[in-house]
Image (cartoon, rainbow over all chains, first blue to last red; front, side, top):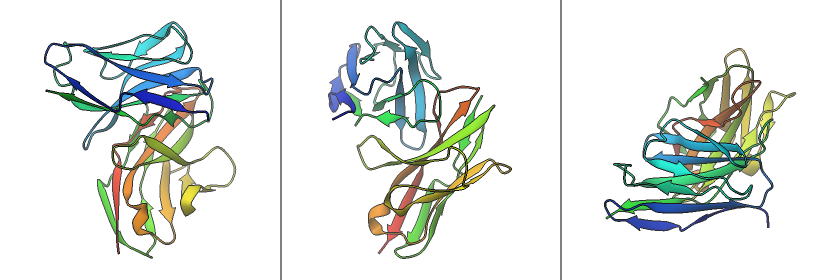
Length: 113
Length: 114
């Protein structure tokens, strides 16, 4: 089945610790995105990538980092510099241009303990 | 910069009644608006999109949306609501000739009462 897979589903982070969220797609999409979802705030763009080895900051990139070494993979690292990381994180992919919809993973819920 | 507005945080409707969830957008270039639905602790699922042609778009689960270019709106509708339609609905937009990045509204919680 074609799709986009996020792991883990739940993640707990200690103060001062970096954690990495995985996102893999087998849809052959050029573009991939990371969004953060908080109650009442909708989806806010963290980082996006249109092509391998290239990515751009979104609206709330501070405290996060990404890589795009392979077309199918776009991992997100939440660093200790992110002061309020508890949130629901969504990865998505789409064709780079045009009128097509984005496909979403099932999300990772990150909690600071 | 492109933006999407969903003016209602919550919409309440009785089962069997028609429902409307509102969305307006602002983009540079031709707009391609979308609707997605989200169930608790899940990712977003695509419902429908406008490309060109008929301004009334039909999508999944009996939902439809009306594209109005002059009012830059793309309201989601359903003639007869079901309790199982209760979920969080997001409007999004991409633009041709502008930013290809999907921009999302804040979401509208639809509650259908039995």
